[in-house]
Length: 329
Image (cartoon, rainbow, N blue to C red; front, side):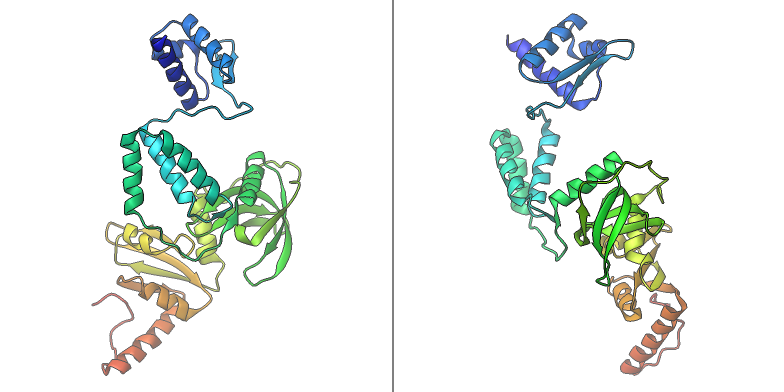
């Protein structure tokens, strides 16, 4: 009986890992016959697990969705990952799930083996959440948009532009992008006949969702990079390009995904693209990153840096005479 129970748990674990399992493959993994697999599947069904079977050459078993969520079987690393994810969600940027995350975490920690509880508690004790000011979005809004993306349904939404203008937009939603502090929607704007990136905290979907649509070719193979360019560079009056004399990974650590795009040149240098409506804002942003740099464009920013260079040199009593660059010569 103990052997049979252990095998049922192993079978359930396999069904949760894979979408479709041919009977012979399950039998091989469990070390039993195909007939025994059929009997074990029947036992899982008696316990309330919705295991579906298909026949034919491509037939097999699949764990379906039931009226209630069955217990999940997680290995050690998966259990720790879920616990860490729940703890992060409790302090994250999605409103309305903090308390739910704490309750779920409490349930999980009750059943974790001692060795895993120790790992999770050690991580918790050594971690301090850095609370950055940022927009909090509704979990309901996120799931509504995610469902529309998945089902290819148009969305009508109230949207407030960065200048405070309220508009009604009709879009074909493509992907949600989480940029650390903010959530964005990449969608095809039917009113503008072009791809756009929208801040989730500025929109309110109008329900129900609209008719289905045929997905368009996305604007980029890298939607995350596309969103970073759209919100960190493209929408601003001034779009700057710098050569940074530091590895791309180091620069990216100091440039949020919604504040610029970092591209590696080689192991020791990279290109930073950033945008702003203020030349002073761009100058301050790149200077405070703490790396040597050279400014390339736009021309207005190059001239602005020259004026700043002269002003600082005058303040120090050493009028500058070298070419404009943040990299020592």
